[in-house]
Amino acid sequence: MLGAPLAELSGDQRFLIFLSNNLEFTRKIKGDVAALQHVVCDTFQLCKEEELLLLRQDLSITQVPMERCHGRGFQAEACFSQIQEGLRTYQSSLDAVLELLPGHAALVESLQLDAANLSSNIQHQMEDLGLATVTYPTETRGPLPAFSSHFHHQVGSFFILADFQRFLEAAYRALRHLAHL
Image (cartoon, rainbow, N blue to C red):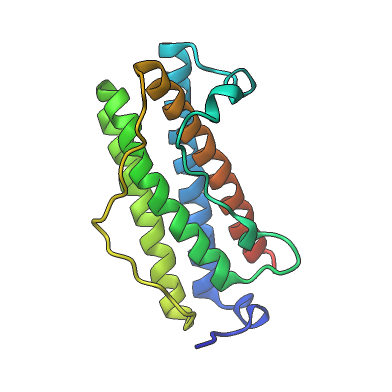
């Protein structure tokens, strides 16, 4: 089922409010991810991605693609679905960070809840717009990445957070793009 063309949505007040609210929500989540990145940097002295790139090859860290959210073939429906998939992936991946930083459980768990809530917001907006939606089970979590050492766990958590931050930046740009159509 196809929803309203994007041109028709640009004047829809409810859609604009959704975009405004979720741009702000995405900014908040980005700030929380940045706070955890600082904790990893301060605690483990893992601060610069370029110094760790060789180790990345040995780790099974899922990177979420965002190609459906930019470029000439941009489609709101596909982009929203890709953002939802990514939020679910990172919500699950944050379990590895939680395991590494139990002293920061409140922040990590809040971040997981925020990722779930943003995904839910997008799901509801897609339904409101009549866009095709894919419903995923809410409680299924993928397996945690298997780290061969505590150091690999630290580096893996560093990359989970760095990748999540890049993902959120791309999602933010996509939402902002929709707001300016």
